[in-house]
Length: 431
Figure 1 (spheres, rainbow, N blue to C red):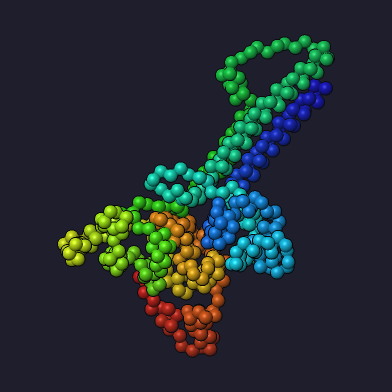
Figure 2: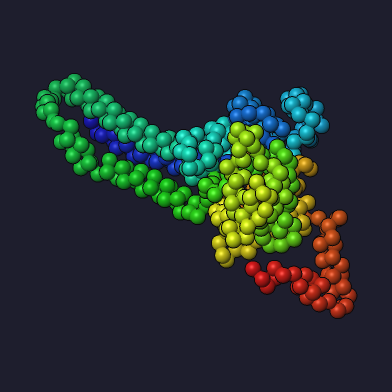
């Protein structure tokens, strides 16, 4: 009987350690799924949906917890087809908004499940410090995931201890029935007990294995997100509100960032552009008849005296804006190629509405940002995924029509120069 007990004990411990390790690895994988779901949500869903409040579409967190996963998979992949099939749940969902939800047939079931997992958990809340955005995105492992992994390890250790005591008690009962005299163990201090525990090779192996898996997971995530500055929001010398200008006043992005339409860089507007409006607009009603302190900073930078309406060039000094979106020096990005040539493909891929500028695809809903922050990760993987999924059409696109025409000439053996293929564009040589 004792031999059977010992065999069960050995097999059980090995099986339990394997199970606990499997749960730990699965929980780490699920944490990554939530992170992936957040990225997909920001790229494809956030233009119409918010997690905690209604927008063009309904608030996602309560809906994801309310609806069946099977229905959500069909709805997200192709809601128009589901509505057309007469599905009563889909027909009811379509009544929320007159805007038809964009179909996402390219998303796999696993990707959609990742979005659902993220929407159910919601955005991790961060206490504002005053120097960073309260809604800044974290691309790493969430606090919820870390707490879950730690809890699993602690519960595993507790279960091991409790079951170990239960096995010892059963063994004592068996020995008593067999008439074996049991020598009572002396009570030892906690420190001695811990030392004995760490002399147990199986416990030490399990502990080290959990430590390696945990540190390896966190280390991998840390290295993967090194240099990713999603949510970066530096304090600017002038508190320029994109929400007020692009949102409330509906000023077109390219009125200030004129370079985005015709050059590699979107360009930071000069103070002269600000003065087109702020020579008259001074927001004095908010400051007891005084000029707004932020507008006064513009006047100071350009050497403008609002009392005399004169400029003093000797007092001019540049506004030292802090760059938010900063690609590595070896990465080449051309704004005009995306804003003009690729606009149709980007709009379709990101599901932008007609009234939304194409800039939202990368920079997010700028018209809701009081102060600008980096919305997208701007990683190589993020760019490549868009380039793999976006569908290019030569119809009604002068750039691709020209490319097709030149390719036809090449097939016929006609003379084609590099200039005809865009070889005279400044960005080909000048970065």
